[in-house]
Amino acid sequence: MSDAETDTRESTLTILKRLWGVLAPYKLRVFALALLISFSSALEAAGPQFVRYAFDTVIPEGEATLFLWFGAAFAGFYLFKAVVGYGGMYWSFALTQQVVSDVRMDAYEHLLRLPVSRFSNEQSGSLSSRVVNDPNALEGMIQAAASRLSGQLVAILVVASILVWMNWQLALVNLVVLPLLALITWYYQEPLRNASRSIRETVARMNASATEAVSNVRVVKAFVGEPQERDRFGESNQTYVDLNLDRRKDVGAMEGLINVTANYGIGALLLVGGWFVVNGSLTLGELTAFIMYQRQLQGPIKSVMFFNDKLQAGMAALDRLSNLMDTAPEDGGDAEDVPVGPVELEHVTFTYPGADDPALDDLSFRVEPGQTAALVGSSGAGKSTATNLIARFWDPQDGRVTIDGHDLRTFDLKALRQRIALVPQSPTLFSGTVADNIRYADPDAPDDAVRRAGRMANAHAFIQNLPSGYATQIGERGVRLSGGQKQRVAIARAILKDAQVLLLDEATSDLDSESEAVIQDALNGLFARGDRLTSIVIAHRLSTIKDADTIFVLEDGQLVESGSHDELLTRDGRYAELLALQRRDDSEVAPPITSGVQAS
Image (tube, rainbow, N blue to C red; front, side, top):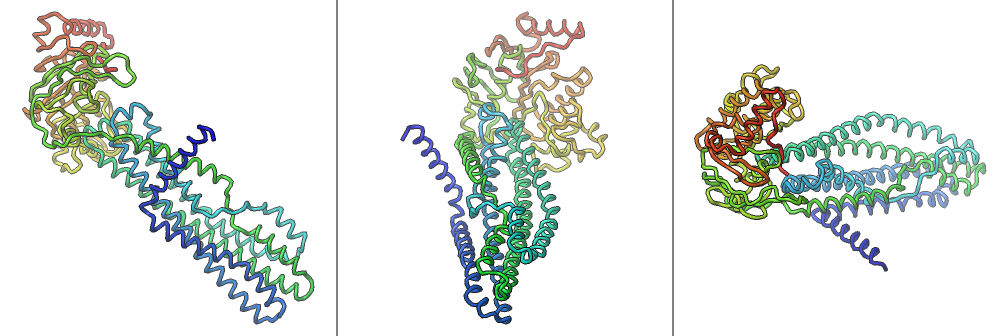
């Protein structure tokens, strides 16, 4: 045996062990379901005994009363068999749905707890697919594996032609059965189509919810929004389960009626064909062959051609899910009491995965509690990287980031991020109302607190002018709001959080002068929230941070100078150079030189 074959077998065995690990919590239900399906199979094996009894007893004796009793027993048996089969089918599907639902929720919760580095290594759509599409493939594998495999159905037209050729009179019985089968199929066609449409729409909502949370993961983490995202996704997930179960009830009822009708057709053949045998117009062998053909024609259509595809797709999905679940989540310390104190970077060096040069190189600076500090510098200087480390989206390879002298890694992540507010350069809003987006910082905040935050962010006036005020739906990512309006909602959200550290990432970089002035007023409201708010601002327009307590000028991940606005101008260094370049460009009515969006 080759090494490749050994690796493949070991991989398959590993995945099958994982599959059993998934099913293990439901082992009692699996055992009960196995017994039910086994009983259903036993009933299937008893079916030919009706043919034997008809050949050996009912037909030879030729008594009309016996024929009637036989017909009644036949009908009752197959009705009972259909009920048992329906129960096995439905509970098999219900178990599969429960297993896949739990796997999907576990995967989604784990996804939200992954570090930012994991999201930077894989596209958000692919990660979302691991949560939504891969469990669906796993569903197909479990369901296909749980179903009994059957032979392929012979083409109806061919078999029907053979039946007509053998005995057109007996074939007329199909004229009663086949229209009934067509009527049953037609009756359930529309409900099943509508159910399928609703399921697809629900899947689309799940994908949208998961993708939105993944693409906005920094805001989710900064505002400790994991429980909200879990609840929002969980609602759609449960709807998906309920819709599938309702659809499966219709499918089961349709299949049950088809099976009963088809089996009644067999009974009719036994009665009519048997009477032909008694009268000598049909041989017993011909009747047996007719019944066999009839079973092929009327048997339930169960496709097994794609079972291997489902098995392989399910195993691949399980492998991808295992890869996701094996990724270690974010880890934090045990300390839940985050003190008010200076925020400090102590000889921090950080290099992004795959990068050759460090984004931060032995960087140190300190921001006292209650002060406003500004980070300025050219693109790639390391400004955004520094704030990412303060929010613990990343951890430095060397040095440490502290609050009041305590390494951030010693704090519980939820407790730490509850104390840090983030206003990103491109405001991240979620589908829902204006109030929902402000309340994202505190889901239990009363309406008065939401409106107070809106006023402090200089947003209350424009919100009141919206069609439904704070209850206005703003669309996905806030597409119905202007850039300045979205930024003010994001600032209101930060105000509502009542954090002790504010990270402000280029809030005015993409705004015109008028909008910038409005946003600056909103920021003044944020800064005025309390004298213990420590603000770290990444500045695009240097004129907006001239009142900062301290300005730190970064270049190539290092601190080149620091001081107040006036002090730095007096030194005539890099800060003065940046300010002069910006003023020159403004005077030429050209777009201002960016101070950096994302360090790399």
